[in-house]
Image (tube, rainbow, N blue to C red):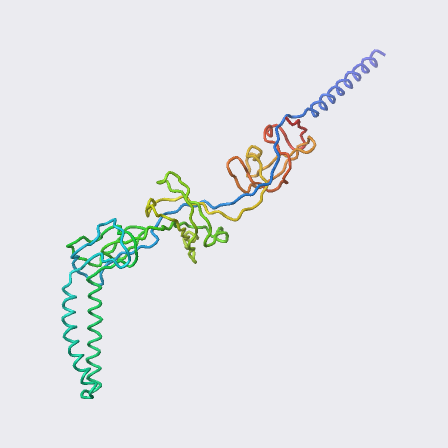
Length: 344
């Protein structure tokens, strides 16, 4: 009898402990985690491509003579602004003078045979022979005249002289990387407007069009924001980088932008509508690249996988959640899918 009484006592004790444990577990599950939430909102966002670029002159030419010779006179110092048609450099004129003397002699012969041809006193063959010599001599004189005078083909700024006054000019190549490498006596550039060249990745090409707006900042101008527009896009891609060169036209009336300056470029796309949340609401699962939000519905947590569309400061555009949803921005480290929370 004593043995049965002892077993009954143990059974009562075990039953009592089990009930107490179940009560404790149930009580812990009812504890609500305090969190702070914010509402996901719709917003218009203008996506953009961030690129690096370099400023170049709108037009550039290394001006030289058709034939080697001596530079007799330079009419404008380096840095001068010149107009189209201005005489910039005179070359030695010995060859031009010689050609002119020859032309004057041939011109007299041509005038004489022309009169004889009108009277029928000379054969057509003789007349054609003299006329051919006259035309060739006249073309030679024109070539020598152009060779003796270097004229500005467009309005611009004389950047530098590659040959100085009194020096002999030969077909020397300019080897400055990024600029024209053709032979010349001086380099002329049109600096207003300037062109900023950027390389656009092939996956972004479909979103970039001629005439599109671009925001440009130069380190040399303390990050001042300037507005330009895409003037051209190269129709072929580089086989090495798989990018296409785009040129962005930018006003430079004050001359502050110099060729060779480094530029930060942002090309804006068409505005799109997106759901946005605070950056604090994003939770990334450790060891993965998966991003989540913890949405709260009727005090219960629901973990939602999302994709980030853009980040603008403390605002993140996301897909995978609807506007108006309440998302946890503080306390998300203490909750899991199905947790009960108290919004504070």
